[in-house]
Length: 255
Image (cartoon, rainbow, N blue to C red; front, side):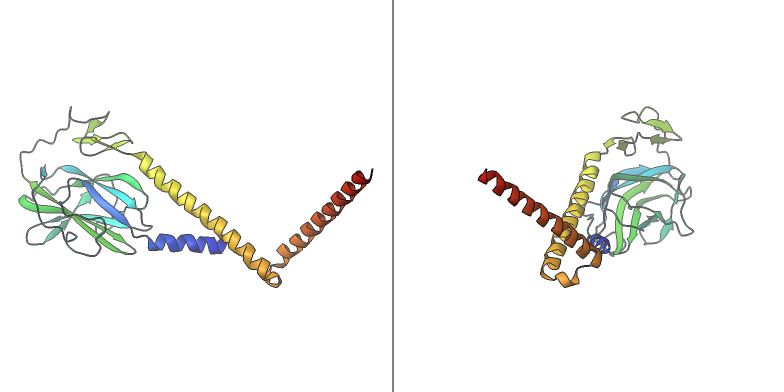
């Protein structure tokens, strides 16, 4: 029974496609969380840049995990107009030799890393390419940016909602995210998703028990010996109690 329930849970999870969407910097307007295996940017066309970034600086990148994926890995690359790309390193985060790191493995409003922009690169028509590789395919999304010198990177006095400026980056409290801690993380959505999953699991358990009861009631010869012995013993006790109850009722009515 337990194996059956676990198999059903695994089946449901495998049928649900992973879903991830960029939130900061602003992604291209046609970005979709449901497009898989469309390189380089999920089919979204280049649009206006929403971010000015200083070469050689650190910059946060955030995304929402709507449906997580066990074993998912991500990478961030600088994509230039000729489609050449440069893998980007992360600040205070570990990646493998090719720039991949674990990601999107739990449901959350904001998952954030800080990328290190190469000092020698400058461009006005490049993009940050985000790739999330899952067991059901790869998600490609892009953010159009401008890399130019002279952009002030000091966050002193700009961090909101109790965030602190450390190393030219706003370090946000656990309930906020974004370049300046301007996005509030809605934990209610996360707990709601967990609640729905728990309710679904309970439904599967109850349905499995009922199906098993009906099956063994119609096929008592296939009931496991331990269960059959228990039912026989329990049934005999109930029958005896019923007889005693009837006998007591008869004596009371006579008197």
